[in-house]
Length: 232
Ligand code: SF4
Image 1 (tube, helix red, strand yellow):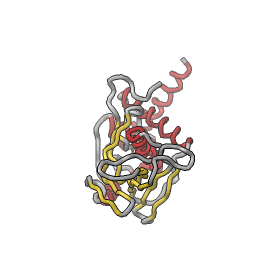
Image 2 (tube, rainbow, N blue to C red):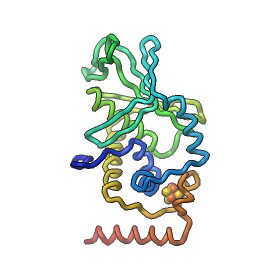
Image 3 (cartoon, helix red, strand yellow):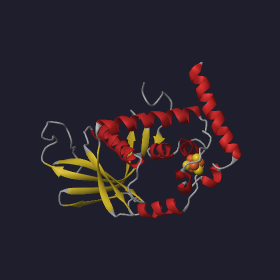
């Protein structure tokens, strides 16, 4: 089944990361339009300021494009990539014959895209950042007609770049999450809160109130409804 149904709008690339962090947070932001900033999101915004301005710069055989708009018709995604490095090479193919580089207007040769996403904090135990980066790569692949083997995450706390391989497992996970986000938006129902360790870092904790008894009861109802539906 295609991820995007006829007459559905694309969802933001960031929604995939929000969904993996917490489906309720994803629905609050992308279904209900709630947004709240805490010190962590503010730190993330500052880190992004340099790469949030659209621009480009060529250094020898590398062109750096910031704030590049991306879209995928197939997955129903849209958004902005912090930075995409384009590495110049003489042919469009790699050693195994795959098309990995495309023409860029006004520039000679072929240019191999390599997305780089900026994140505050340090590398995390979950795969939300990798999924968001892979989603950018899937958009670039569709837009440029190339295959992208890898990208990188840059973490503000460690000031280090971590390379991410877009292997079949990460691609499958990313497409699966894109489908789940579309199903969530299509249903238009915000899941109830589930109190986790992640709630402490969540910018929506005051809106969500995951510790309330009412929240726990609605979470129980939500789980019971799902069990009932599965048994029908
Ligand atoms: S406070 Fe917790 S349950 Fe509520 S949206 Fe944030 S992470 Fe999800």
